[in-house]
Length: 143
Image 1 (spheres, rainbow, N blue to C red):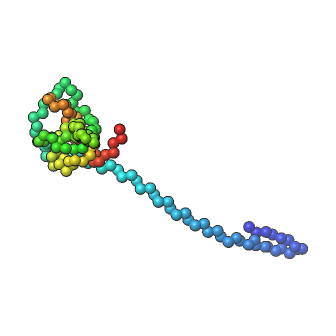
Image 2 (spheres, rainbow, N blue to C red):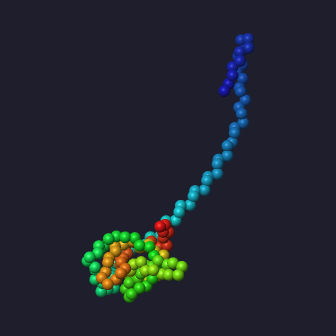
Image 3 (cartoon, helix red, strand yellow):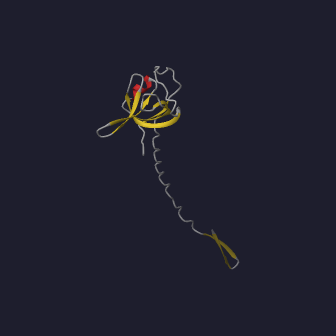
């Protein structure tokens, strides 16, 4: 900004002193919050090895092949079958049987899992049998 001053036929231009530039320090970038780790999901591909044939007879009076999600800790059951159990302070309650590839399930023994897959009801067995499609490792279950 300049000012003009007129003095008896004389024109003076007076420069207004420029203020010192104000240096505003750049704010430190806030650290980006670390994203929450996504749960580990193992997708079960089409079987390369077929699960061992079992003599299981479907109970036709019950719904079959319905997709469900079942949480629990994986344990061995009968040959060719595993089970998901609910563990309490002084008990272990079976929730369902798991029929899948032995090479995959053996690595997951005694781990907390959430298994998604088709559920079947079999004659002479009180527990449902799940065929895994997805296996969530160490899920946090809020129920």
